[in-house]
Length: 216
Image 1 (cartoon, helix red, strand yellow):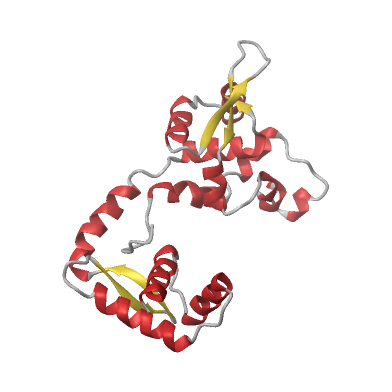
Image 2 (cartoon, rainbow, N blue to C red; image 1 turned 30 degrees about the horizontal axis):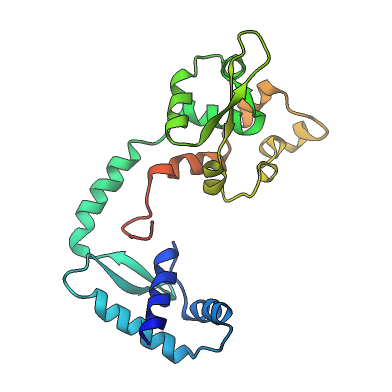
């Protein structure tokens, strides 16, 4: 039973959403290549629930939304809330989001090219993106001065939930249909459709945790 309990804990801990008993059963049966009784999973959950209700643990196992999830105990909500509030202050600026979107769609791209499109200096924006590991230096251009080229990282794709850059939304998807049929957006037009909602969400999530959980 302890062996099963540990696997149940690991699966619930690793999931950002509540996990249903049926899902736990399906995963473990595939992993162990053997049938597992739902009753045994429920016993394992109850054992874990009792364990984490003890005072020395700052989180507990809660049944919520048809599944099970680890949540921070009420006594620690204030501390976690302060952390989340401070984290929101570290979000990327609009300038950084626009720069990130341009790099995503035009990579590899140099700083002069980005600044030509945006019309403003982007040194600070690039610095923040590098610090957050959303972009990396991909080499140097063959143009005058051989400026650095920038591209997006695997971390960027992880936060968007895509496997490759070809999965990014097409710029024309964010324009009026009557203006996009048969058109190929120019570099300047990208600014009018970017950053996309997905890019904004990914950038803002880089330094945030799910509300009052310990799953991240």
